[in-house]
Length: 180
Image 1 (cartoon, rainbow, N blue to C red):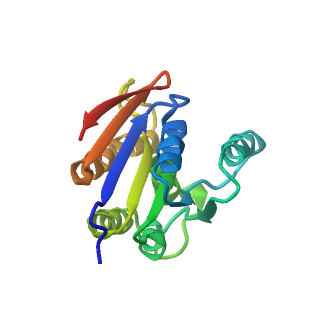
Image 2: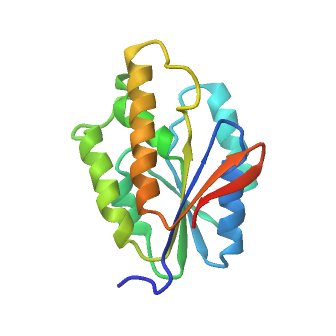
Image 3: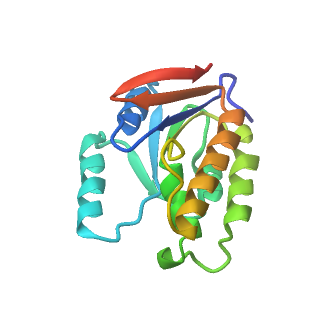
């Protein structure tokens, strides 16, 4: 059964733009129970510090669910009426699904995972906040995996934005409403 007031909101921005902070603010303001869906895996100390900063900002009563690969399955399990899911972030999830060094588990195929996400998003109850990096505003990167990442991130953001009732772009901590 769907929530009578479902809301899918995509929040885009560059690195350190304030997109995660905006998503956290919107989750708090929702007044709903919040589940934080963390897609990151820590591969080095510097990235571990970034993850730690995100963790310290979150209220202690928010439940964190780790979902570095099978995001659609996790969302289906966690979504509920009266609950807000905050997914941070789609681009880390993408990177871990396509990057061979990230060792995706057996059976994790990017195209299958992407389609599963796109299929499940419109059916989820509650409020869903999706954070993603806008990576297509710079030069075409060197290296095949980097170009694949940029292309797939752009396609994913477009497909998710088409499904969302709201889309925001954040730059310098300032949100700009693109849709909704």
